[in-house]
Image 1 (cartoon, rainbow, N blue to C red):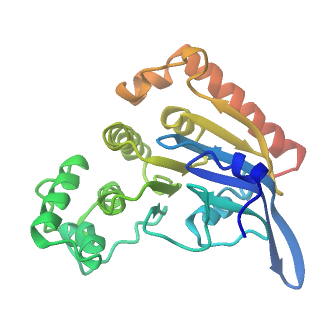
Image 2 (image 1 turned 60 degrees about the vertical axis):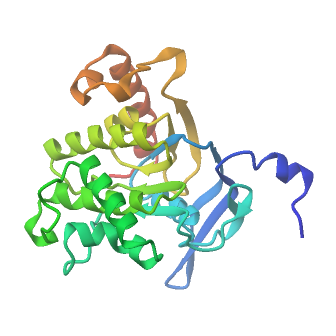
Image 3 (image 1 turned 30 degrees about the vertical axis):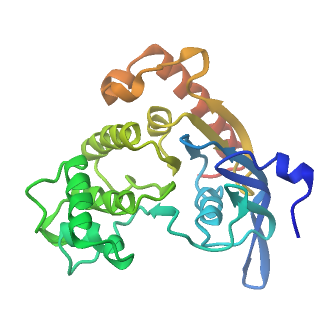
Length: 276
């Protein structure tokens, strides 16, 4: 059955969630994790979700990944309902999820080989992404020989190499030390400029959200609802930040004012619902 005209008018976006609610069953009790969330992400947009721990950020993202079906509501990509995983939607998790028995080159190549891409073309694509993630010289290294940041570079390159239309990134830098995390944020910003994919990114870091995102979605404490959506480019706020270093951006007055605003919204949720 085709969607109604009203619904079709609401599907003008790369990713669309309409009135998504998610209920978990645990110990014969029901828990409302996400409550009537609607969100539209346009093609080529980098949207970041932040909020208190346990607010349903990852749960909500997993509906776009096709890993979880909403209890109520629907999610769409290009106007088509998402009913399961797809190569068009690449997922990067906090844990690196690399094949330990494969080299850097082989890990990045894996999806291409699975899809039957010819060898010469595979090698060209892999070399391109090894250059983009700045791991030349490590092509034949195994995951146990890499640092945490290098492993996550490989995981991101593996997803990018398959050329998905959408990247879904669940706290990909959460396990990294502060210095490595800063470098990874700068590198991801560079890759986003070069590749122009649609990105939905989950993080606990307000700084990271402002530095990377075109819009920041602030969620309430559980059950997760959208409390506020803040466009980072409003009033030409730091319009060239993707071409600037992390330290240069985060010390600007505009950045600090926006950080205080977003943190204030999150802190209010934590205090109101006693999440400590």
